[in-house]
Length: 246
Image 1 (tube, rainbow, N blue to C red):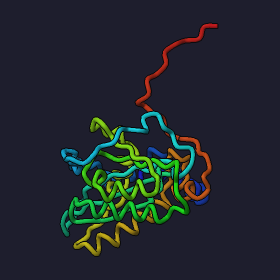
Image 2 (image 1 turned 180 degrees about the horizontal axis):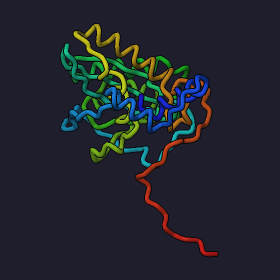
Image 3 (image 1 turned 90 degrees about the vertical axis):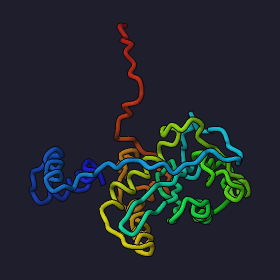
């Protein structure tokens, strides 16, 4: 995980053991030992040039207030010593819990469908208010994927202009899973890759705090539905320079 979250988890331990180290000192220590998270280049996994029906973006101003109101989906590329794999992920936008995932050696729709089935199997009832959001890739537009959503009365939403910010949470989860976890390990085959992915998803859901969740864990928020306070600043919002002189 990132250095700020690691410092939050270690702070009480350091105080208990009288270790005097601020956040900057921890970053320096991590850097000296080459333990800082490295950023990777992006590989395109979306082919939107197909004849399947595409759907409009329904979530431009939508903010979920509880779990299972908005799921975001994406596929990410994972290069290993054992070959190239693709990970299909479905994440709950409120809790940031990964609710469905599947590993594959190809970009065929089968993996995305299996990830969706995993997520749907965890629902206790029909989620009438649920929106499923994704890019316009053929995996999400194909008949079988769309039918699974329609059969559960789930609304379908898709990006419209290719801007990553249209599916920002899914893009962010992709980066976390790869940069903070998977890239730290070496796998030689599909079986090892699948075992590692299962462990990583469990670690992410159960043990990784999020600044956007008030430093709570995704599964904790998903189960309790508690409201949280974001501990990070959104630097993309325009600043209001109006001065109240009254």
